[in-house]
Every structure is written in structure tokens, then in C-alpha cells.
Length: 77
Image (tube, rainbow, N blue to C red; front, side, top):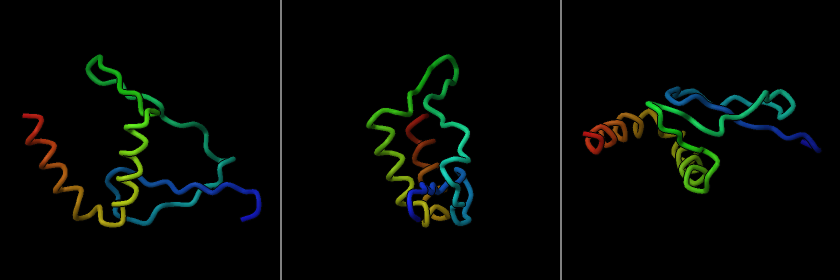
């Protein structure tokens, strides 16, 4: 709409529609996550592509999330 930038935000495990937020209302963004002393940078090409894939499958998340969670558990064991 004009010169306004609108972002769509959505939580990880919610099955509702994404919420529209104007860019001026965004306080910041997560660029890294640290867990058990290990840091993962989220602003790399790998995680940008991964984010796009998750966003693309988002409308189907109520089916894909449980399936992909089981696959992740299998490979982490």
C-alpha cells in the first residue's frame, strides 16, 4: 500500500493465519539463537532459505509440523 512496508508474522506452532504488522511497529529481529553454549546465526543464506521453505509450507503446518517433528527426533537420536 503506497510506500508502507507490511510484514506478515506468525508463531512457530500456531495454525491460524499470519498477522499483518507495519514495519514501523517492528521492534527488532532475532539474528542468532544460543542453546547449550552453541550459537546458531539465523541471518545466513541457509537459514534464509529454510525460513522461506517454512513460510511456504505454513498454510499446511497443521499436517507438516507433527511429521517433521518426528523426523527431527529420529535424526537427533
